[in-house]
Length: 320
Image 1: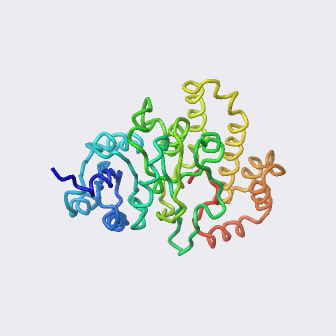
Image 2: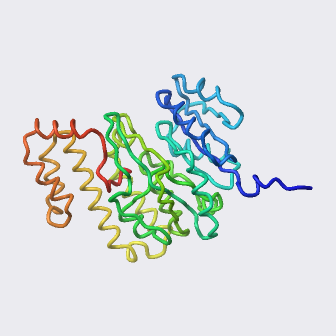
Image 3: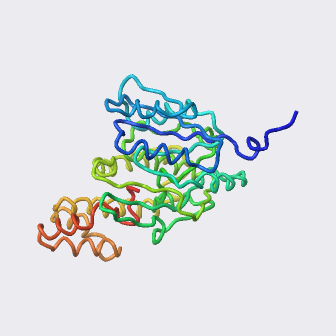
């Protein structure tokens, strides 16, 4: 029997799309998967009990999009676990309903899994907002490849639409997404993969990450300190001598949380609280110093600066 060379060279990739009332950008996101130059993929579309036209839009595509609907709206991490149960692919990728892929994304990333120790492959990306502003994600943001758990812990540098994961790496974990988290579930999962597996990267810009005011990132940022505390407690349980081995990384992470939290307070015009959060770090970190100096600006001027700047995140934000 003659083998199908396409199937041999292109193992199945399951692309998870979790959707809750995502009709605004949904067609554009789905179309960016259908234009992939890599042909062997399926979409696992998990509708988290949407009440808009999301279901109609998703069902208008062919059988390569497999539609599932939950009976009720559940936390995103739990919904992603439900979608993972439906995946048939050797590799797993994620695309949220407001983000986009470039046509060559899967074609350029899947070959990097030829190294059997690689559990996750990411790529460069552009993040952009409704004002037409954009930035290349890794133009100045630090990142690492190979065995890089320590940097993932202290300077988390991944974004969901850029990643592809080896299914066996996921299955090597005790659990997938932690349902306790509302904003940190992906960072936690990718860190746990990075503890036992290598990371690889395509330096091509292969994804576009949309930043807007209704993004989960912006509406739930206040949960980050609590969720990071839970995450560190869990790592202390599952990783030997975790707090001793990674003491510096934990300290750097806690500093980054305070700085990014102060950035959000500045966006809201709460300079006094931001100044208090930044005070211990203003001479230790360049970004902390810049933000600290911004706290002396009049509130109206500060809000005007952020309105003109738009919603582009600081380049090394933990909210990425």
